[in-house]
Image (cartoon, rainbow, N blue to C red; front, side):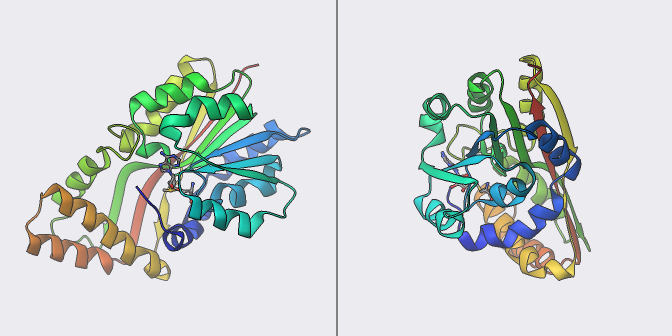
Length: 258
Ligand SMILES: C[S@@+](CC[C@H](N)C(=O)[O-])C[C@H]1O[C@@H](n2cnc3c(N)ncnc32)[C@H](O)[C@@H]1O
């Protein structure tokens, strides 16, 4: 799956507003007094770097499969003291080697693990160094409210959820179940896990995000064949002009007991 710079820029203000500040404060406390080596998985252009580094400092390695996104991150931040380097990796193939080589104190990311399968999340949990923290923001949780409600919303949303579970490059995705699955895996392995809801709460001042969000979800639902062309069109048109939209996410923080 590829993500354009324009799309990532468009969603970033909503992401920044949505990130749970309590979890960030707890992570900042954990980071205080050290300069953690931070590995940002699927960094894109550096949204997590921008959201977190002012609070936690550190030495950041941004990783992504998309070289254009990493180039953009370097252009924006390459001369900043917390920005260490970028690594062009395929996290499906290179995960364990990347973690072993970079020895992170913190593995972080955003809008990533809902793309991943249970198998890949098992690998990530197993590869997390025992003294490292884990922070993963903005995993989609499947809860959406669009107001006024567009026609065919329930059928379309169920189809969207089934599309969320298709393979996005990491095996069959867990989609909305990914955050709770990862929380359980890390808890079983001994990390202290906290989670918080981090929904996008959008109104007409976010119309520039709502319209492409409607188009993107319509493209996904079209692939499922759940709606006729005319119903799909009606639904997408209704979503595009929605006045109030909530899109649910979960932020996850896991701290090592050591
Ligand atoms: C939804 S975007 C989120 C980007 C960024 N974390 C943010 O919040 O703006 C998912 C990111 O994961 C990256 N990605 C997807 N599959 C990947 C893979 N197999 N290896 C490395 N990065 C991957 C994409 O290129 C994209 O930058």
